[in-house]
Length: 300
Image (cartoon, rainbow, N blue to C red; front, side):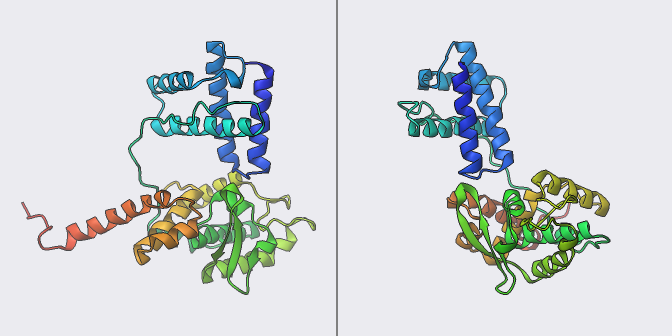
């Protein structure tokens, strides 16, 4: 493709980063997906974004499917392309969105990973021996207490926390803000961290969580610190997002209130939240099989 086509992708990603506040993880995926699309266009002799049509987008999806790309990966690639064209339409660089009505084959729906209550307690009850470990436990408590996304956690500033009210203001996907409760134990962990923070943070730094250099902590650093803790405690390898999944599944299991869980997670569509009903049903089915007289298996 022509250099100008690459430049518009760079502008689009910059728009997602600074105006839409997408996570770095999503931006990396979109960049990689759009690079694959541009490589395909180069092979097909397509020079400009305005030259790509829906038939060629279908052929692109079909090629990815033949190469063994998972349905979820194809969906993300098409989603990145649809988003790019919405941006190009706004900027007057395209006349239509060729990916608008094209969908990838559906993949089997998988349940999100979640730690059970005992393992969650084992992680959160870990003992801190130095300031950065105090910070770590405060981060893990917040992820689980309030169901934060990783990007939301690392973007928190000091003024986002209302310690008196036991709440915080979070800016999520699409720059949507929501107010979330902060649990008693999470507040206590935060207080412990805020006593340590002044000795680490640079005077002008507003980030709630800082690194050794006194500046805002990155999402990648949070992942590494969680991995360090789980290895130390003998727990399964865990991603920060699993703490959000644990929050949702444990809350739904106890309350059964799907709408409330949707609001707390910041899901725009309740269908996104409904995956947790499958997780909850799995637990209920297990209890049923073990306890109901007509469900118990006869001993051989």
